[in-house]
Image (cartoon, rainbow, N blue to C red; front, top):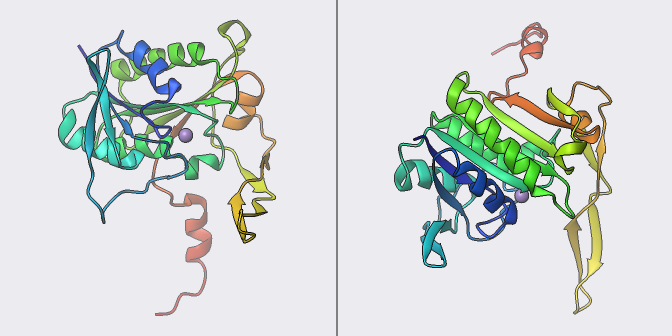
Length: 252
Ligand code: MN
């Protein structure tokens, strides 16, 4: 029976985590290690200056997982390092909110899966493309199917799958696209407000804007009713720039 580590960045109480856990338990033995509260947009942060604590989480007397005060990447380190060192697969999600285009850079969900891959375990990140009224059922089912495929076929070294699912029922999904990561930006990012004592503060906000109209991207697929599956890796080298930059006149 395959062994699976499940984590997320929305926290141990997040409904998306439990929807996916229910489905993954049909495939194998699932150990859940998740942050004790939401840690979205933590990217690949790890905790090195303060202790990490782990608490067993029970529902109706049964152990359903471990909550940590760490980041998503810490959860994977704790899982693979001590709580469930021999897993065959790490799955991160289901995140509330798409992790397409440049969201991938900030995503704790994706970074947890990257951490698994850094530690040598095949991994999948799964996100639902909505912030309101989530429909978890289809995304959870699809997540189980992808997990089964990765367990069966494996993944190339250093490659993980970033899966984004439209917030639609199964009947409205148009298909699955294997995509590349698109480009996007946030506009109007800083909201300036006043605290109750009259002092100003800022809150990161703003609207997400696609700057890439290509139909081969993750964001296009999800916006058009397709499930997006992007194979990603953590080598950020811009291969196409190596030669042009090498042609500059470099002096020591
Ligand atoms: Mn999140």
